[in-house]
Picture 1 (cartoon, rainbow, N blue to C red):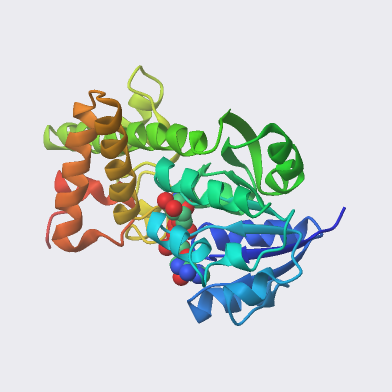
Picture 2 (cartoon, rainbow, N blue to C red):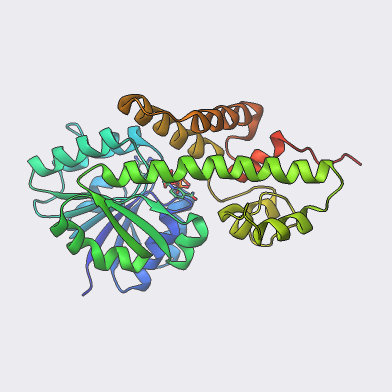
Length: 299
Ligand code: NAD
């Protein structure tokens, strides 16, 4: 069944996700604040709208993929917000990684207007977004997830129902806290090996088949020259930005304080990424955390 979908936010993730919905036969009207992102989507067959409100007019489904809580609340809430415009019964898939409290707030406001909303943050990186193999981690009602399934399946491979509204965000934040810790740990281990005379590729091959194995060593090695097609191979361009990882580690810290949980490694990782960001690396891929441990020799 072909649907009319409004897609808001066409960045590193949203751009390729929108393209996969087009490939699945849906009609897309798209909006982003950045003209180049809008242009790439129209080149792929979408219709560009002049505003988010124009994009959602007549849509059966709305998908949003924005940076952080404030962007999502700004888009949907308030007198000028999209919830005042979107037709009753419309299905909204909010895919950004944001605070669980923010997701619940927007979802409750949507429900009051008869709009169905799920939080559906993703895992799998830009590679997964392009390949259509993302993992979706959903919070919301069973019936709304069932209705969203065909669209999620056009963009992803694994779809999990974490619980009620906001639960998708909680699960996503736990995952990303672990990812941030793991990437910093991987960079630290590789830098230790190299400082002691090992070749980074040899050490990576060893770890990838030993008990230190993890997502970074298998698919996203932070050391330049070890793996092709990853951000480390192109000066840490593209991928998942340091400032986005920092945001997610901040969300983990908030969730930790609210639940009086203990997350010392998450806090340490948050501080490492914050330091790295203040050194001017906020826009690089998060695997550039390696730079905190190792500077390439100058010739
Ligand atoms: P990005 O910064 O590349 O893209 C965000 C896009 O949203 C930008 O193009 C921006 O112009 C647009 N935007 C912001 N406010 C807008 C508004 N009001 N109206 C229309 N467009 C607006 O970010 P990204 O890497 O695509 O990440 C998006 C979300 O996905 C974030 O919450 C991030 O944490 C999450 N995420 C990213 C990755 C990754 O690998 N990049 C992986 C998993 C989850």
